Image 1 (cartoon, rainbow, N blue to C red):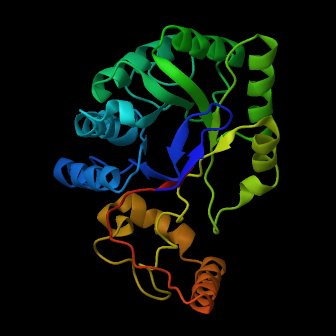
Image 2 (image 1 turned 45 degrees about the vertical axis):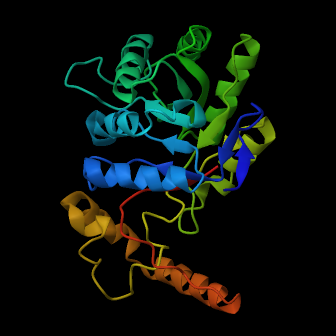
Length: 276
């Protein structure tokens, strides 16, 4: 499998990342492990999960699946979202990060995380304190590199500026939503990341599977797809089932046909892929 560099770190990643959002939710443990095994056998080495995915179950499944392969894998997870009912069970405070990194390490059955993402912006937390916390985790050997996910362009630039001013480790990567359907990052976020030397790891490059060839204009989502497996996804279908989006799908099909290819019907695994 083709490899690319993780920003300026020198670490090599599979160009295709296995996103683990749906492990333990749409996919049971057995099917999840089968998919991970198939990905590793195909030469993939980059797994992306988060503490909030299936409320920790995704991390647990990944942790069991990578035993015996840990040093061959670049493992990413995230912190920020709510993980409990208490007032400090979410956010980017030192208290929450320090607690959640230990929980993630336990579930993943590892003593370090290769890439630790701030899952999204936290207006309540002091960003400088957050970055000092990440730097402490790097010096403690519990985190190798850190990144940001779902940040605006100015937030990315601010994080880099603070890290450089304080002599701390810079962010290595940015993980935004990006596909032919969702292209907002092209205005400011992508130029900021490229100018600052951050790797860009798009999440949902197939737009929740909308670009995968599984869906047809005027038809309900197939029964074995994520949009039919829960009321949450079915409600979100309304955001995708729009004229503009169908025109993009049809244009993609025409381009593929002109190149002697097709918009492949991907297996309905429910996995969310990524691109390094």
